[in-house]
Length: 411
Image (cartoon, rainbow, N blue to C red; front, side, top):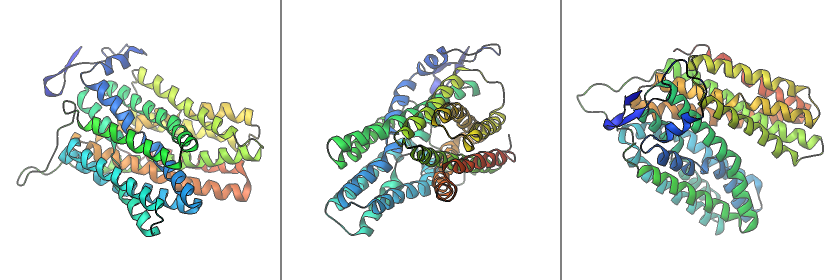
């Protein structure tokens, strides 16, 4: 069933009948949309820094100064600045267009990180290092939001967009599974600076490649003096979803700390990486399956079911004390992650006007980023007081709060 797409293009609707069920060909059809494969690949490359920037800065600063405290402060400064400016950058992307924002933002981001490296190398004052880290974090281009906005622009039909957002979730999982391994290996094999250089080069290449693709770029929605007022943001939907994302971020941060602590308590600290990889693998597989299905439930309903499933799946970890039992539980728990995140993005995409979509998605991304740090902190405090098992309580409580946060959300 052909659909009229943007700029007069003809797009194929993947979900042609209500009776159609899972088919892996949906992904092939999506990527066959003119320009889709190119911007999707550019988006994967461009978001490489989201999983590598923090650890790259830690490796660089600690290698030069010997201080993990200072390294953590530099990394945290960049991440906090990124979260603080993400929504504003999303608004600019909607108003002025992706090319006009991505190009200067990418250049500023790369220059800021280069100055961080120079300042660290030449033992510049702490305030100067932190200032350049803040500049770099604030300017980091929102590549993931840009690619999701492009999918919403080139596709017609919520089922097709669900599948596209599943592709984006899979891309996120791949980046988070491979990025830290790559930069850590580079830093260990050559120089602590190698990981940061790789993150900058790869991220800059992807962002600029995305900005250069004009055919699939959503139109700019710059306000016109005397014209109609900008479309209103549906805060009755966006804010509850943002709070839910914050709670999920807390769950993710707490799970990482609790899992690392549990492996250390069991005398096998190296197993923590395997356990977390299983968790991410479950999410990746579930994301692929979700995108291959034609889902009939409203995404807000799927969001609530996903938050409930994630909460229930993490509950056994409070009492399990054998790593061979923890592994399958984490794998099963991971199955609920990507479908829940996909449903949240789909709910927002259906509710937020296209003229403010990137801004709305940035609000959600800021929520999940803001939740990781407190989740890690609370879990760490619980580990110190009661042990690793008790820290999984933070995960369960965070999941329950995420479910409660979605209840006031409007369709």
